[in-house]
Length: 351
Image (tube, rainbow, N blue to C red; front, side):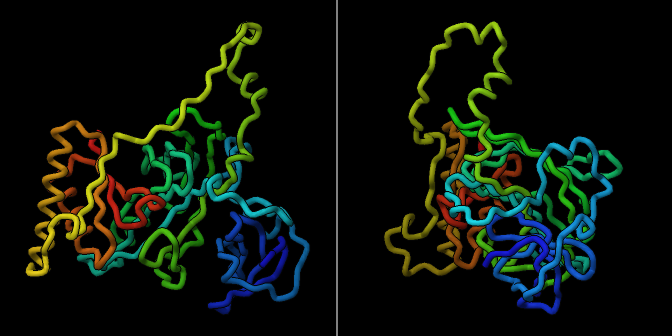
């Protein structure tokens, strides 16, 4: 269903109403609700009421953090094109922040996990910080590979409250070898409209088994963001270099990544006959295989190793990560590429 800025809409699963004020991506619109703030909403969760009004700046509140360095960094809001063809998913880069509920803490407070999701063909090097009074307090910053997600913060509601309601997000896009240039991204993320205590905001999604709050941060067809060759020359080549003959090198064909080793922890890949084993014995055999493979990878100078544990009831994944957090707490890990392995694999980074 197509929407236009100014359309009055109502929610399918709620009594709330609002006005469309912008578009985050092909599936998500910004709606200013009756309480006076904007919220991201999936298109399939709202319907038009049949009325529309002329949209003006009075419908959107401007952040008190707005300053000069935001004016040229792009925005979370853009106008949707009318009859554009569907985007090639291979060329679309999407970055989201996500929250999921976890078990209650010892203080009987609701537990949460905060993730950054990089859904697209480019790796990113990102910096995320708390924005307050023109200053930035760093929260997390590192490389996040294509098609992966990373845990940024966890704890109870007080811990996540300390993160703040206004975040500054910056990132660079890159690939291994030769790749098309994509402009760096820099924006403010306003979380003031997100109430993590309201279960209705947690929805079924494509990134987690659990319901989650998905907050769009960046969504763009990367082919439309590539700097023209002439502009690249103006940016990076001096006039002296321009007047010389520069040999053109053809990009090398993409090579298979030999730095990653895969270990399948499904019991059928470990034992030929396991029918006589109890569930506890099966789990122990899988953990023994995990430990043996990890120790071997460390000794053999392996850079990365992916353990395929599947989804199931989550017990094996939990025990694997428990070992990583205790016995191997000096080693980093994250979810492996969800496009390659689904949601049942963990990547361990040894270097």
